[in-house]
Length: 152
Image (tube, rainbow, N blue to C red; front, side, top):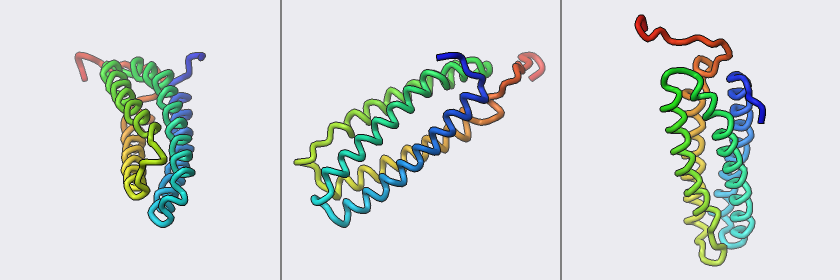
């Protein structure tokens, strides 16, 4: 992958966030159907959830590939920000793996709906936090401006 300018990294990740937000909306609708229709829709719900989990895993991989390096170069705190991002992504991969291994035969529809709703809320909060923090236009700028270590 060629090196992207910080503004390009920002645009790419924000575009993926918009796509993920659509998927999150669909998962919320799925949770509502699970609550209403129960076992009748559980197989399709698990399949759709797995599809979204794979989409999110791919997004996390992309962030590791292009956002983490951009953060490392952004400023003096770049290494700390990139390390936090990568650790968070490791934790998310573990959670996604567990969610992806749900067994249709033994999963309770109401519990799955609650788990999906909690997951959706967490992902939305993660994206909001990223957009306000590591994806800010002030941080991911194309101009190479360094912070004056002595003067502030």
